Length: 176
Image 1 (tube, rainbow, N blue to C red):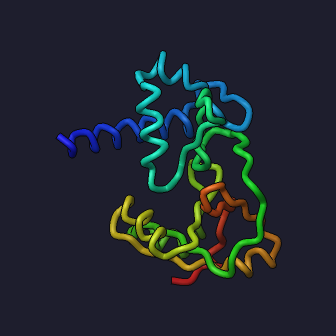
Image 2 (image 1 turned 120 degrees about the horizontal axis):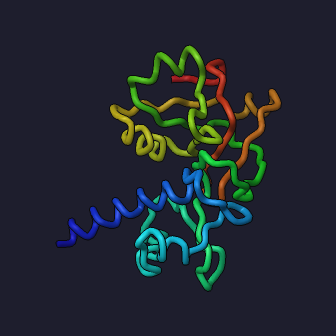
């Protein structure tokens, strides 16, 4: 029964991720928030379910607007243009990008593209990058010379849960 509950929450979490990151039909509120009432009334969520997803998400992807939990948003990962109050920051010397081995040739030729999202996602740890890479197949971790990128004028943003974001990573900054 516990495994069924876990699968159900994972499925609901994926649905929530779409609704908070990619739903082009919704007019997002300021700073990328979505009305919790909309999710309850129109998408079958309960407030308890939303709280559980926020609490149990190991990556800290979601947050409520305040203690009343009237609004919720994804902190990053959007394909719709919303301002989630990302902070511009100077990155550490090295960041990591997790991907699948099958994408390696393309990345080494073209760099890391944001694809359908607003930004390329980078991690501060190899472990986190491995987790990301596993979602796409056999994982490969790329080391990014973030210091050099920053010195070359490339802008970095950081989400509240420590995910680093940039618009593009040229192949010249990538080390296997």
